[in-house]
Structure formats: structure tokens, C-alpha cells
Image (tube, rainbow over all chains, first blue to last red; front, side):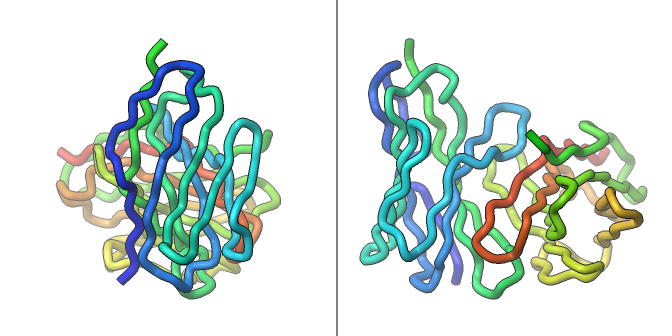
Length: 113
Length: 114
């Protein structure tokens, strides 16, 4: 079946430190992955995406790493700030070209000042 | 930056009543979606829509659910006879394609069934 999961429900980091949020996926045929940030009372906000033909992609203060061998995805946030506190979801494009996204359970990132 | 907008932000309805949730996708997007999120849980896919047709629907999207693009800017989700278990946040999203393109989400409608 299709499933996407995150390793830790909550991650607490000190302001200024780097954060790493992990995700495992089950469908080895998946070719597209997205990280979303969800703040309280808001919808998921697109952070960064990566296609399966890439191992790494960088954005502003964020890096996504994809390890297809072990079906693992991670989001690295550099110099974490209080505004980064939120729930982070990885999502995987479902099989079939219908746009369906399969979300993981979410990791809550808490940034301590 | 263009965004997806949803109304109302909160809808309270008696069980058995019909509700319509409204969405205005990003203007140049042609692919539309509804997801739901029960409190504290992950986001779940309901339906994808393109060219006035449903492309895929999940098991949750039963005969009580329907979607419509009534005009060039709105995309609606209707629940005909609501149940207590329909209480959730409902998110609309849109994208520029079904392929490897990110979906952009609205801030959701909180649906509370009494």
C-alpha cells in the first residue's frame, strides 16, 4: 500500500541550531516529493520539492535530501528561527497521474529561544 | 504572491444538513483538489479535478460528496447529508499540472457538525 511516515512526532531545537526532519516512504516507484510547513490555524505551506532523479535540492535555508535506496527523505533547516516553529509534513505523489498527494503524519518543530 | 482562498473559515452545521465549501484557486491553475484533516492528524486526499471531471477520488469521497466548478473562478465541495464524522478541516489546493508541480493550499474551512 501507499504510506508516508515521519520518524519523530516532535523535535525541539535551540534557536540558531540546524534542524533535521526525517521521513520514510514506502512506494519505491514514487517520483516526486514535497515538504510542507503548517502553522496553527493555517493550511499547508509549500517549502520545497524534489524529483526522484535528484538526491539533493537547496532552497533558502532549507535543503531536502532524497535517498531512494532506503526510501528516506529529510528536510534540513539551517539556523533555525522561532518562526520556523510549526508542523512539517512530507508528501509523496501517489501512483497514477491524478495529482493525489499522500501525506505523512507530521513532525512538530519547537524552537527554543 | 497569488494564493488559494477559502470561505467560510468556519462552518457549523446540524447533522443531516447540506454544506457547501467554497474555494477560489490560483487564477492560472487548472488542477484542483480537496483534502481534509481531522484534528491532530495528517492531511488526507479526497479528490482531484481537472477539465470539469474528477480525476481521482478516495474512499472517503462517497456518494454524499460532490465537487463542482460553477464558473471560471470557484471550486466547491458539497456534502449532501453531513455526519458527525465529517467534522474536520477541509483544504482546497490547486496546481499548474498533475505532474511534478507543487500544490498550493488555502487556509481551510473548519467544519463542525453538531
